[in-house]
Length: 125
Image (cartoon, rainbow, N blue to C red):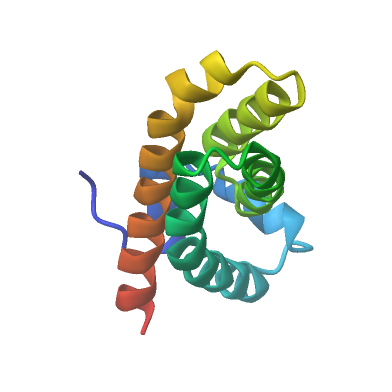
């Protein structure tokens, strides 16, 4: 996988960096701060989301997917944002088969985002 040394390298990992920067008022420094916050949140949320799913707490799972959708959109991780939206609406529609089919994919994508952000932050330090 491509290394992530600069925010521009995030594009190689599927981020729409321009969208992320635009969501931060066009300010790259703020974007980096938001990316760092997303990394820290991701470290907490990944195990929480898995736990919600495994305990079949779909109400909380849906809430977490709603938050993930918005958080990922704000950093330009549009593919993950869209996947989280699909999961959020699957819960709302009680389509638990779709939740079951896609949960591992969503969690894997989230892990990839967290890994990319972690690599970026180490290189920016």
